[in-house]
Each structure stands twice: as structure tokens, then as C-alpha cells.
Image 1 (cartoon, helix red, strand yellow):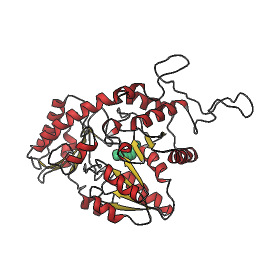
Image 2 (cartoon, rainbow, N blue to C red):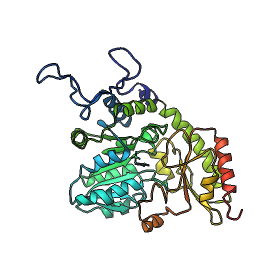
Image 3 (spheres, protein in one colour):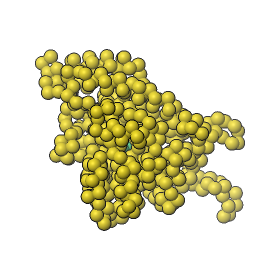
Image 4 (cartoon, helix red, strand yellow):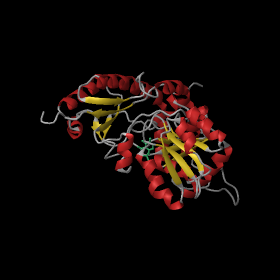
Length: 383
Ligand SMILES: Cc1ncc(COP(=O)(O)O)c(C=O)c1O
């Protein structure tokens, strides 16, 4: 099956007992055991729940991995993955990845002496140089949040395999519809399913897919032991969201390309970060490893314009955290999604105060462009 069909029929396709075309929401914590020592494969919903299982199977098929796991948030998913490591281990991370991933390493896993090293993972030589005997994994986002830097997944996986360490890819921005890291050599894929996978800004959720049985056993043990599982209802919501992923992503991509071109030609805009520009740094790699350029754009508004006014003047585009929903969202990375990254690191990598991030939704693109144009015009200081 091609991915557009798999999104609709993959995993567990409907309900075997009644023929219902949708998997039921098995809203139960426990299961009746017919006699001592006998169960029907289900004992307790933290360990296994059929609605969650349907989602986990589906995402594993979509990412072409060995097994999938659903969590109560993207951060719960990342936390479960980081729980594979032990004190003394170091993880190499991309230099402008999601602020929460940095924060959990910097402020939580540091208690367990799991360390991190920030590296520009777009530069494979820098990655090679950064690896010593303590490095046990390379954790990348590509494109990065919020600067859209592209990392060569195959290149990273090759380096990691030579040193017998893991490649972990946060695939939130691309989704398996556009990019399949496991086919490019990655061992573990993480998603904030809150974003494109759910697609409607109505659940907070996370997913992990691993590429082998050993990792699957360890991840299941961590999932069951630490307990941050996704509820049956939210699992159902993600299955529902996934059915329309292909059509949503196609529209996100189409709209985003037009908005990026528009922004690039505006006098109020200093720089646009969009991996679909032919002259952008990672363009050739992105073209090779993904089937599209996604729905995200960041841009720097010029001096003489007030980014706060820009956000305040938007009428259709919602000013708020998050991304990947059907509605367009605008966010200020420096004070919102990336506020937990210390100022010096943020400035150094380019997450400056006048950086604006847009998640382009699936509304009419002319409406979106008009909204941005008005907000830009009205953002002039003393204007
Ligand atoms: C790329 C990326 N990864 C992970 C996360 C964390 O996901 P969640 O908010 O679902 O915990 C986010 C959230 O914004 C994200 O953008």
C-alpha cells in the first residue's frame, strides 16, 4: 500500500467484531481475566490498550520501523527515549532544536549525569569531531525548529553506525508523509504528534518508532514502567488525524511556498528561513531526503519594525505556541518555544528577538498573505 492508503487502512483497520470502520475507543483501565492465570492478551491499560495499539501499529508502519509507542506528549516520548541512556553517557544534539528537548536534558537528565553536547549537526565534520567514547547517540531535528537548518540523516546515521551509537531523529516538522528517517539509517524516530500528526490543535501527544526488536523491548519496558502513555481517546484522535495527513500536508506545502516567496520580496523582511528556497544552505539534502519542504517558515523582521506590533496586528493567523494545525499560527521563538535556551546560546545560533516563526495552515493562501501584508505594514515603528 502507498502511504496515502496506509494512512487510512494501516494499523488495525476498523473493528473486527462489529465491522465498524473506526477502531473503538477502549476506555478501560483494566480487563476481566476469565480464570486464574488466563487473560485475553490485555491486563491493564498502561501496559496495553487496543486503541493505543492500533495507533502504535499504524505509526510503525508509516515510519517503516519495527514498533511504535504512543505517549501523553512529545516531551514524554523524548523523555522515554532519553531514558535508554545511563549516567556518564553523552548525547550530541543539534544546535537549534526544540527548546523543551534542550530543557529536559539541561535541567532533568543532568540530575542523572546524562550529558549533552551542542553541535551544528548540518556540518558532518563537526559531528565526527564531537564524538568521544562517552557519546552514545546523536539527536537531530531536520529541519530544525525554528531556523530550518537541514541535517543529512544518512550522513549522521553512517557516522553513528561506524561508532556503534544511536541516531535519533525528531521528525515532527516533516511527518512520515515527507520523510522516513529509519529508511535513511536512523534507529529511533520521535514525534510531537500534537503537531501535524494530530493536525487539529486538539490533543497533546507524542510518538516513538524504533527500528529493531531490542530497542522495542527496552522502549516498551520504559513506557510501561514510567507510565506516560497516551489515553485511548487521544489515541483515537490521532488515528483520525492521520487519515487526512496526506491532503493536509499537500496544502500546507503549497501555501507555505507561496507565503515564503511573498515574504522574501517584502521590504520589511530582512531574512526568510525556508528549506524550499533553491539557494538555501540545505536545499539539495532536503530535496534528496524528503518529499517536500514542509509548512514552516521563520523570518527576521528588519530594524525599524516592531515584531510585537506584527503579532498584535494579525487577524486570521493566530498568535500562539505550537504548529502543524489546520489553522495558521505565529510564534515568537525567543520568548515562547525557545525561552528555556539561555540568551547567549540563542543569539549565537540566530534565535534573535526579531525572529518570527509561522506555521502555515490550510486556509486560503490569499487571505493569509493579505493578513501578513497588513501586519507587516502596521508594524513600522512610528508608522
Ligand atoms: C520539534 C518538536 N519536538 C518536540 C516537541 C515537544 O512536543 P509536545 O509539546 O507535544 O510535548 C515540540 C513542541 O513544540 C516540537 O516542536
